[in-house]
Image 1 (tube, one colour):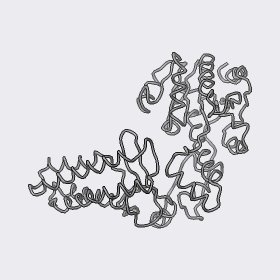
Image 2 (spheres, rainbow, N blue to C red):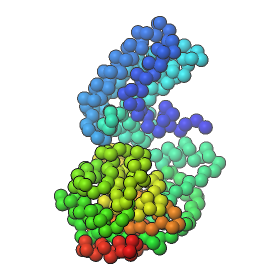
Image 3 (cartoon, rainbow, N blue to C red):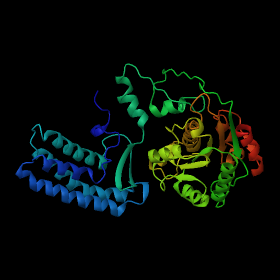
Image 4 (cartoon, rainbow, N blue to C red):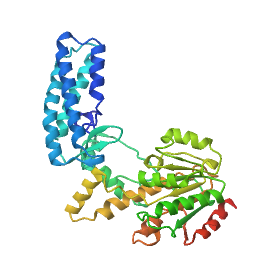
Length: 399
């Protein structure tokens, strides 16, 4: 089935700076004809100029591209696109080179589409992670899927532990553009939560308070000193993780970004004796399997509302507001509920697992939306108003 996306990609141009040079090097190694040599050098030169311009205008982190920056980069991209297309035409369609010629042509097409999308609403944005990159994301994914994907399928089965918000699949169905007649079935968890306790740490400051990292670090010290167990602490921001990591000092723990990344950290964490903690970001909220004694304490540092700086979600929120809709109720809150459910699923991985979930965001007892979050919890929570009362919760599981 042909791809429903322009240029065969859902994101029209995410090529990192090394993508095109890699194609050029391979082209030379496979024996490009001599007449293609000047074109290869032209593409190299234009490519360096383009990414130098990108580096000069995009901010740190992730951000939407401002119209002025987009226009400036578009002018720089035009000669690069022309050079890529010319080189692609000059590559012989031999068995050794045809694939590279096609790849170069696709790069030219995707680059042109990035600066002049043909249809629909798109969000151009940039990222400065390990290096600069440009991204183009469709704002209305639902309409594209509804038109170009679902009608071409005879049947589809979508399964997940987090399709409902909570108990209502309408949010996910709308975002995926699923037909109204699609049927949903839900089943209870096959795991028992009889040996799980949940506590809301109402005594902590709110997460944006300057004293929050110190209070959370002190709580982690206390918990690991009281319970001979291993803990996963889920963060939503690198800055807070860094501060808690610094404050924990000699407490046995691993921190993402300082002691490795996800897979390496998981291997090291499994080898650590309890008590120990693993401090993780986005990648640890889902897909992490630490059964039994490998994980018996789960700490959610703050409610996982989407980052206000996310360029695509920011554009979605603006569109909802322009339609007179409530972007918090219709976007930010459902996404946070789904994310929390994903995070909570890290604790119980087998029918015999036990443990304690500590929710470190006191807004769960003070904000109007608290009821929505409480309904996604697998067992009723206990509200801890004093740090000393946390020992009672821990004793219910660890004795």
